[in-house]
Length: 402
Image 1 (cartoon, rainbow, N blue to C red):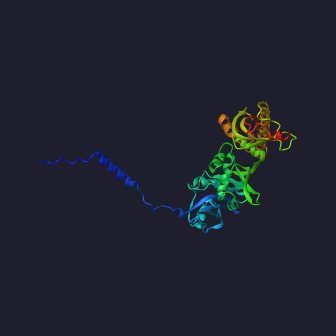
Image 2: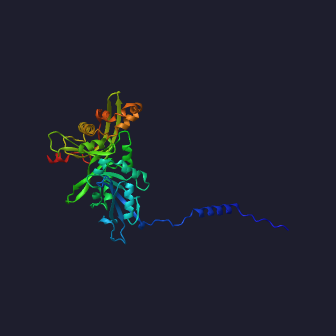
Image 3: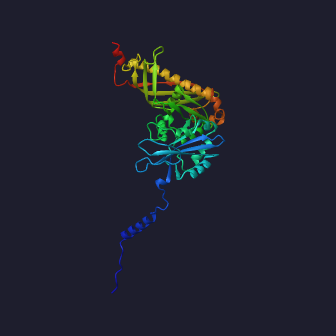
């Protein structure tokens, strides 16, 4: 009598095969790197070493041990806020950043980890000699973050990394908050490299300098924009000139005050920008360039001590006309300064010209862009709209005068 063959169900064979394949994907932990084996970089500062080389300062995060303040290592230890760990800094100098990194790794007991680096601070002195050769390291080496924010410092970048912030846990958080407070201040390393390699060859970054707080403490602050032209720092734009760049770059968090001539500064209408639309149309006649710029700011009234009643449609229209004139003057003066003083296209007009006149750009405009930009004419049109007059209708100052 013949025995019947035992048939294994096909489903079981498939499941067994899948399980064996999954086993091959399991790996061990033999090559792991524990957290306590890493030097976590929060910020990096670049300075000139005085010998033609570069000095790099790294701010390193040191976790607290057992919830308390542990002993710090390294040079120039600085404590952070109560909620986080501590920080310390390490510095080294050399001919290039690649060489400096090797020196720093020899000096630091743990492996340098760039995954949490949020800020790169470049001193004005080093930026005046050129930045792209140093940015090549951050772009080419895989570890540094190209999304980290860029700042140009008035003074030594290493001194800023050693300061003690009042509200944040460490200086890296302070600089990150400064960058995020304005759209034009939030310039990453990648964005700066794109601007410098773009049609205009001009970039900008927030310029950080020391200022005294109400407590008499020196703190980092941003009051102007640093202009980088053809790889080098050439100057800065502050006040209304910086405001003009912000307006044409689409900044949304701005306050604009209109005051009648002859009135005190207190008798003003203060407006906050809620939305800002920009329309740029270049015109090239073969010899001269004209930039036709239309700005459409949508605003909210946040304080009104002026003669205008912004709850009245007719008076609101009059206030808008006056505001249009002021914004137009700010933009025109900002463009004029960039043309006459710096010959630097910080507004990115070259990109719009290249897009519309591609053949002319490659044939003649590109080679003569600096001269063409300096002689460029502008036609500025501003059409503002006061969207919200505020939570009250009548002016409180008017009530007090009754």
